[in-house]
Image 1 (cartoon, rainbow, N blue to C red):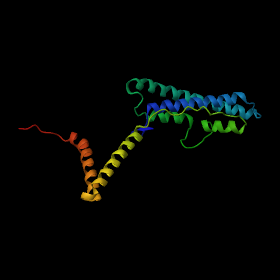
Image 2: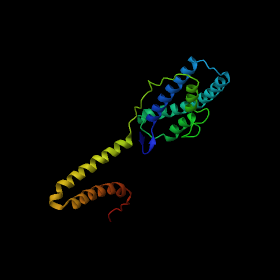
Image 3: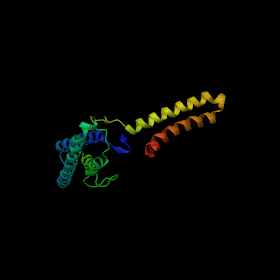
Image 4: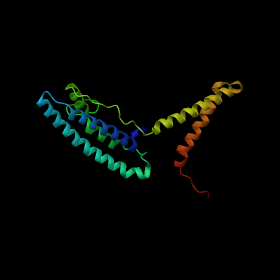
Amino acid sequence: MTLLGQHTVNEIQDLLAAKDYTIKQIKTARDTMVWTDPVAAADWDKDFAALNKRYDAAALRARAVIISTYATSGGAVPAEGTYQDVLSALSKIPGTTQKGDLQDLSNRLKEAGAAQDFSQMPQPKATDADLAGFKAADTTIKAGESAAGKAAPIFGAGVALATVVGIIGLGVAAKIYLPSVPHRKAT
């Protein structure tokens, strides 16, 4: 779900949809339960308010990026910094659960007996440009292998495969290096 190894604007939209839904469901669960420990309830409410403040600010910045790029790119542009900004608002230290993080709040709510329903979680809609590129390369390689296999009785499999790979390699090298080679005008 990336473009050149980075999350895209489309993936930011998917992330926001999922996290908006998650936060709404957690709030609904909190609003419908009765805490047996009022101190724990007040602490949870304070942490949830702080999380919402962080998330709302990051989501607002992310939506500004979406609006500013979507019309011209359709959302297929890298925006890794914005994606990570949203995640950082939800989890202070990536890969861990700290007090006041979204996962911590969900865990504490569950421990207090609240039922949380995430059954309607929005699913990602963004396409994965990198994966599409890998699949296309795989198709090309398999076609080359197939051609090498058919040529094997004449040349031998190794020679045929080396020829196909060499031709593909020359084509890639020409596309990469020839445009950068300075050309002199004929005298």
